[in-house]
Length: 173
Image 1 (spheres, rainbow, N blue to C red):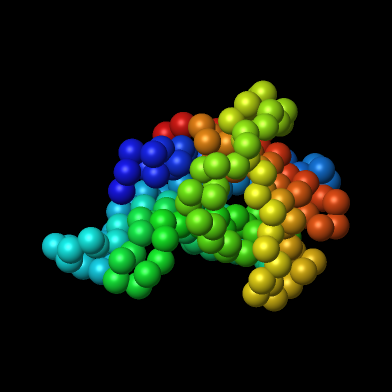
Image 2: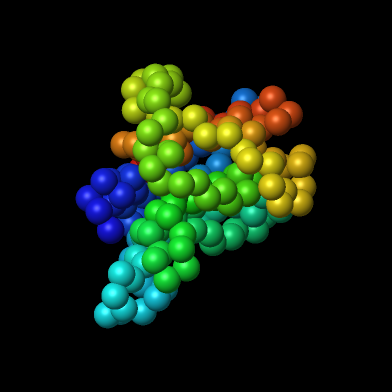
């Protein structure tokens, strides 16, 4: 995995990301683990490597339950499977779900950075990623757009129904 690919993970084990919705709801995401895995096996020539961020968050369909998901996945090119380097985003909060979308890493890295103001602060290293609309089983939960800060990670999400969530705090371990 290249240093550039690794730099796309802004999270640390034990962080808690706190979000507030436009409906004044509060929800959080707890970073449980950051792991590197080798799906093709160790020692395999031109092996594929993945960095995954495991988080505990609210079940989007039931606010009384928690759920664990890899909220970020970065994978190197897999010559074995003929796949390019990819980055995947999967975000879930109360009644909100950005169903996992994978993007070509080079395409994402080339997206223009914009400035975004959220309660957490002013950020100038943000890219905007839209839902591709595939395999979405429940559109009332569906997130249309995520705003990803290269230094802070998820900072805002906009749902199709007009509701939005914004990052208000990052609690360090």
